[in-house]
Image (spheres, rainbow, N blue to C red):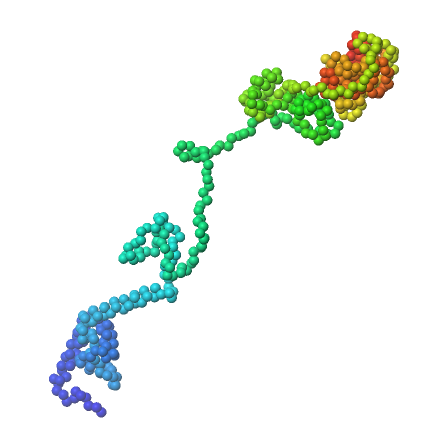
Length: 465
């Protein structure tokens, strides 16, 4: 059994220790609460590392709480420095640790292996340059002032960018700016063009068209559209009334008259005077109200007449000279009695038709037919005249049928019989033409009661046909 070292010692030896201990605990009672833990930690660390000696006043306490084989604790650093100084040292240590952590974070931020945000490298030149030409270089002493570059900064050559820029070569991309041609006024304003209505009202829409068919002739076409034969001839610039071809497209005026195109010298007054037509009729026919004519305007001139056709070449069959009677007309020698019945139609061939009927001032019928068609005797009889007459009938033939009945065949292009010749019903006497006062190929057929042009009277041929 080990004896207590304090046994046998005077009381005055132990008393100071108790006083110091009591003083130490009393001091702890008034210290701020946050100082004690810091002091204990610093004390324990210093004692464990044997860096600082342990105060003798604490040895007894350490021995009481420490294991039997523990070394005596040395005086704590807080005790040696004092509580005020220990607090200052603790605060300085905290600041030191914070500085070390900050430096370590900065080094990790510049490292290639950083994995928590941030940018990587110096980057490439800005894609949008603000301010045009690059500004003067900044003061080197001031260092970098930011990541935004104005002007034309040069990329760093020490590090490759993460994203490579698109290489367009040496070509410069320029905007495609369209060239604007004037007109401009003095202040530079572009004058916008105005769409002008170029449609000119005229009579072109009134003109009809017709495709020539097999067997057609000018007379037949004119009768179909109820215009004169010459209106068709003039509208299509025909050389003759037989100048037609199957499949040809003809222009047909809406009324009898001319189709003209306004020239540089034409006015409404001049056209009305030239063709002897009322100005109001021209405007009304073409459906226009403006009397100011425009060059190239198409107009229909109602009732106007164009140039006459040149005389057609005549195919004349020589006839024997007429004898007896005045004017070469055979008197007597014809049949005394008309023995026929109903007369025969005097034109042979299809497509012929009546282009003008018997009426006051026109004491006959006009039978339109193709030029050169056969003309035959309507009844048997004797030819009393065959030849040319200046009565407007051109080449003509007169036949006496007996019983004071006569027929005449006018405007023919050829005569195939002679005066004094007897003819039978249906015998050819000539060919269709347009000699004399005629505007188209047709036969002017007359029936007389009494001597032709010598006291006789013309009758309606349809009463005998």
